[in-house]
Length: 497
Image (cartoon, rainbow, N blue to C red; front, side):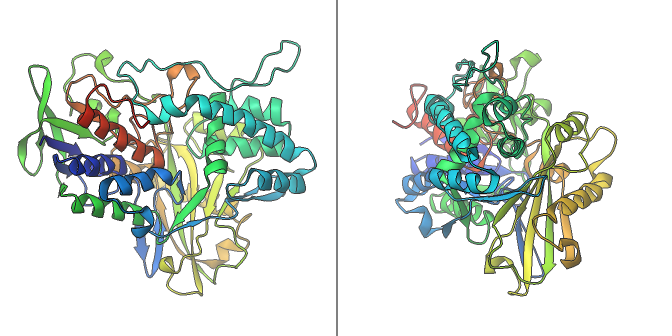
């Protein structure tokens, strides 16, 4: 039985802790805040409830595997899941709207043909076929196997782009796929939004980011009754059932080493704690920037997704009036093109019309009665503003988001009873970083590969969104399986077979 210290109580860290405890190890989690879940938070007020992090679950098979492997129980015994249908509704700048059925490629093709014109669905369907080829090439190395500590995964973009034009050059970025292969500004906006919601600029995101819409449209979108925060509560409960010990309000201020190997951690609540291995679910950059892990030269830092400099603003709205029966659970409101939005983001600002995601769950657990409705808005923003603070800019950005969201919720402003705004500063307080990491992506010369699960320091492992296989709720669960496998089975562990 090994002694394992876990830094942070985020989803990836808890997924690792429960698996290690199930394998017989003695596991203690040290969390600097007073609660678990990391970015998967919740907010309640006056009978209204909101997710402050992700509002939908994709690839639920990851968490089904977690609950089976840590207790031989189905996920649905711990939380209630329902498929969201339509998976999403999209409102474009010209007023066109389309609802995309959940996990139905044929349904999506038909819906696009009806809303955008004949041939639109066929082009999107052909694109998804190429995205599937990309998925099949990257699935194991980018999701199911540990990344080598050297980060030496193939850097070539595996997307099989169409060759068009005089030079027969294929698309190299997601935006170029929209222009060259989809050939409709609305389809291009639809595609670009899958990058934008993960904080990726579609003008520079590699063509391999095509796997993002492929995963969602193939495996579906799911809602957790009571909000996704209920999943974090269930994972925490599973940790406790397996004997994991939690110490809240106890930051880890240092990783202790001897003879070049980890031997423990310095904690705020219990001082120096000995450990045979340490798992960090904290953002990898903060570990080094705050000198939690000792280092002499910056070249010693592990690789992570350094180009990512975006966070999110979340606006929680308490509305008078009930939710219409035909309201979509999720609506994405698109601006007129993405260039202006991303030019503003690159300059450290927010465009007047950002891409806004509107969530309207039909969940009695989240509203005081049927005469009221909770609505959540999210938008991608700079993690740090160039010429203002989030304390002063937050209300203005929230106003821009509410104005955009009226395309999805007519009469929205007149229905608002009150609102709460969460900015990147709040994300930093909850997770240790104002930036939100995307999933691992191939191509881009390896710039979008996160830190490997094994660190440069023997005995220290990385889990969570800043570690392989990157950000996202499902990916956090995958990191737990990979890290626990490396600790239990050793360096020869190659992931699930």
